[in-house]
Image 1: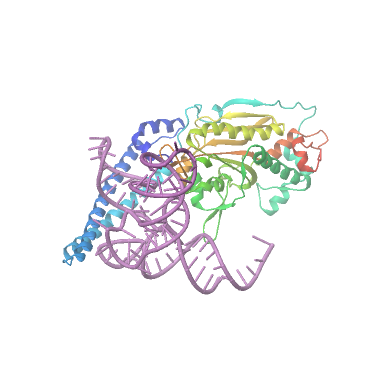
Image 2: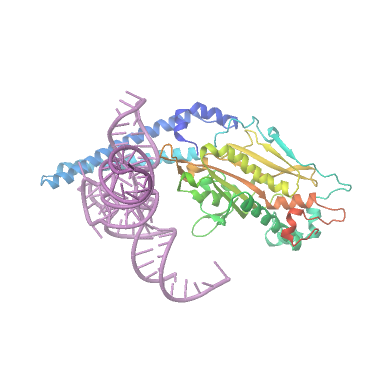
Length: 422
RNA sequence: GGAGAGAUGGCCGAGUGGUCGAAGGCGCGCCCCUGCUAAGGGCGUAAGGGUGAAAACCCUUCGAGGGUUCGAAUCCCUCUCUCUCCGCCA
């Protein structure tokens, strides 16, 4: 959510920034709505103030043994008028809130211009794609003999699910363990175990709701709950309604969770293999920082995600997403793309974003700024560190042998009982 | 699932219809005293929103939502969460 004060004081500036995303802010509609809100609120406040005065006068008159009936009568009339004014206020406030919740975040100045992914800028590249002396298979063909079973998954759950068996399941587990150990032991993140089912409020906090409900799986029952689309939701919401002291910052959290996505808008896309599933595992990094530190934190968090790929010796590149491709709540995003020999191209395996105060305002997550003594919104960041399912894909394709076996990357061998090949 | 207790400011905790946004304490800030330290004293210290150039003024908020009333932290109803006991259970 944007700072509503900024929106009022610099409406044109906000509109110019959002225009970079291709989002056109309806200035006239905003001004009309805000002016209306202002009038309604002033009127309601005025009536309430008068009502309070009358009610207080009743008490004072009674205390002095005087006749309060004049004040009683006035209070009655004011209360009735107030009822109408308050109903109007609630309506206009709901309208304003929904409108504000639907606005994307401002972009950071360093975000490159552009309308879609074709304008994303490669900022660095690591490693060299391996040269094969045979035609490399893609992970689906390669994986089936090793224990990747889409047929079984289809019988159990339908399309876009997978079953892993035997050493493939173990390799998948090893990847998650390796990433968690790296981030907790070497990068200083606290490991978090968090709920996989969350409330609509938590999802509003991180920005998935109200706009992106169709991406989510909702479960039925007495209360509406949603399966998490990413650990970002429960983990970032750890600071909801909190005021964090300056000494506790930065907070760095890591969680390994399944993620559930309906992929409603992706019909026909990546239908083959593990790339796009309704359920996948991800190790997620979250940082909660002082506003002044958030861009340094974004670089650091991105480097932490990159370190996973370096240790696995997987070639990758880092992209700075352009204005049109940066997500709804983010001010700046780096994508990590790993080389997939089976597809002959780089594919997204991590996305690291600074949300500045966008989520913090929605969550009421604040810190006490020692300079002002006031609670102020925190900055939140998150990034995949990294997607486990896609990491499995990358390992299979990059480490494959001509006979259909796959070497275990050295970094993972301790997690595979020393096994060198599957 | 059954029975009971509770939810108040950064934290603890008092407050059962009328200057209560809320005693007291802790914490924090400024000042005083004490030649260091420890202790002591004084003052201040919630958040959100609105109007305004500013000073300032106004409104809201005592778990959430409704109700009663001229007036609700306080009375009534519903819900959520927490705790205790019983039952069930990975």
